[in-house]
Every structure is written in structure tokens, then in C-alpha cells.
Length: 216
Image 1 (cartoon, one colour):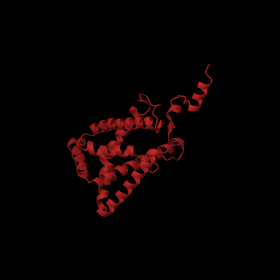
Image 2: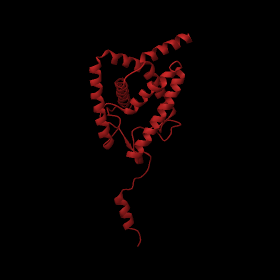
Image 3: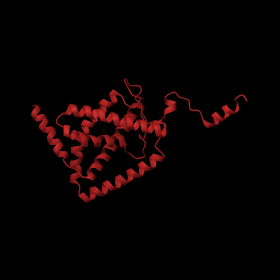
Image 4: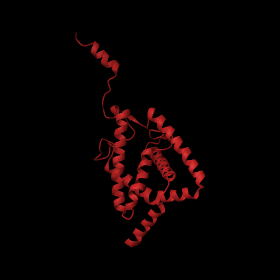
């Protein structure tokens, strides 16, 4: 039974095979869009609000695209050992998520997600529970989503698929550049780190007033 199980996973890895930069781009965009649907659907289910989640304006979350694509690129060699894929996927996703969260905090002073309600969280950016969920997501990306998407990509005419990828990548790049300067924020999207962490932000005008009122 174990031998059959491993042969099945190796067959799925062979289904992935070698792929072009266009196929890699297609996987990245598909995983980014799937992540956006997951986040929007989860927020709608939990809070009853339809909100455009993420820092970008379009329907994609690049952190999911990066995690999914890296799962396919780096974890395929371990496909015969699903528990190892799960552990490595959970660990890698945690590193990516924590790095992205620290970057967003440092640059914008905003949180786009918060796991502080979960036990053993790290700065509210990663937690064991969410890491387990992302580990399962990496397994799903490697064993199910990537082979299915690649079969779909390869059924399309090469010229049509390449043009489609170029157009979507161009739109994503423009959105990424614009959102870097003006990220998507608002109710249900991002929270000011100072307000969320219980810190009081002192405005420059307040500092000037305090200095003016100091005893001479």
C-alpha cells in the first residue's frame, strides 16, 4: 500500500514536470487569486462584510502566490513524503508571512492581519494554528492545484496562453507599483499598528504645544 501511495505521488510530480516561465507566472497569479478568494470569503463568513482584502487593489494576494509557487518549486522533490511536505510547507509559510508582516509594519505602520488572539503567536503575525492551515495549503498546491492548473495551461494554444499571461502580469505589476505608494486600507482591511497595540500616537502639533507650555 505504501508503494502504491508513493507511486501515485511520484506520478503527480511528473505531471508537474518542467514548466516555462509563463506557466510559473500562471501558477503565481492563480495562487494569488485563490488566496484573495479565501481571505474575502473568510472575512465575509466571520464578519458578514464583503471587503477587498490585501494591500493591492486587484483580486490577488501576492503572499499566497509566492507561498504556492515556492511549494511547487522547492517541495516537489519531497512529494513522496507528504508529512515532510506538510512540515516544510508550514515552516516556510510562517517565515514568508512573518517577513511580510514585519515589512508592512515597518513601512506603513499597519497590520493587514492579526493572530494575537491565537495561543503561542509571534507578534500577532504568525501562530501555530495558522501555520498548520498553510501547511495543508502547501500540500493542496503541490498535489492537487498545480498539476490541475498545468494540465489546463497546456491545453490552451501557446500564443493565447502567453498573451494572457503577459496581460495579467502587466496588470499585476501596475497594481503592485501603485499599491506600494498607496496601499489598500480601510475598515476590515488594515489596522493602524499603534492603535491596535494600545499605543498612543502623539501628533507633531501636540509635541509643539507641549514644548510651548513648558516652564521657561
